[in-house]
Image (cartoon, rainbow, N blue to C red; front, side, top):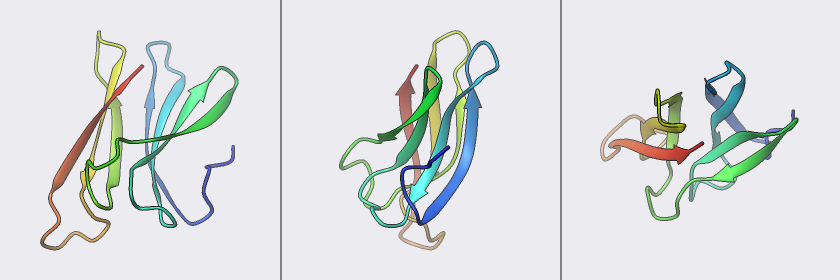
Length: 95
């Protein structure tokens, strides 16, 4: 699996209703303007970027499925540095 970036981290993984890996949250050091995810697309993975303008340099710690909805939530911070003015940050993903 290629993460879609060369410098950064993969931080959380969530499964679908069948227990297969569906989403991986990550942090792309080279482009911190949006969050970065890997999404299972059939037999492969695609890079999905979070919404623009949600946070200046989002750093996601985890991603989890929302039971019974097909959706996912991710949680983290508005910056990769856990010091003020960093704030808690969440994003919702659809199936």
